[in-house]
Image 1 (cartoon, one colour):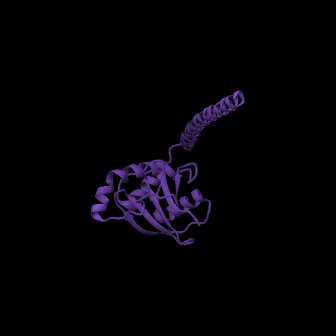
Image 2 (image 1 turned 120 degrees about the horizontal axis):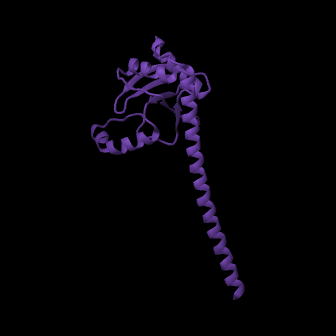
Image 3 (image 1 turned 180 degrees about the vertical axis):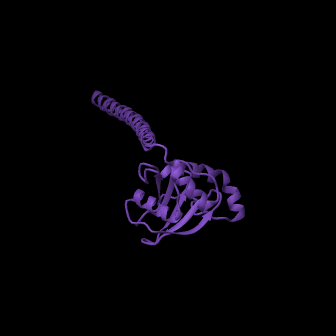
Length: 184
């Protein structure tokens, strides 16, 4: 009888210890995520300071070509885009990659922002029967954040120019989200 009670006590102790370890691991993961975000923000600001004032001299003649080069840097592979269309609500640039045949979408909104936006607009979208290619944001869609660290040192200066030429809207800041389907 005592052996059974001892075995239950040991098992209960192991479960509690496992729970405490899991809680500690989750706290560490969140802390590492915050450190990563701070390091990225520091690196971006450091690059901005080192480049000086070059913003006024930027001219983009081929915005789709610029998107192709930035996407290729971000994805680490050859990308040759052709513009398909510019979609609204939210503003999204839809392109096809001529090298792989896949559709690549560009948006200023992060996956988290898209999820909350589509949750709010779900009833409106279903009434109109509209199907935005990012609705719903499925697991097989890869999201890559493009910024000056992975898409080019002048990315934050050039993005607003490209965005305005392609969408006719004065938006665009320091980052752009690239959405593509995972390869099977």
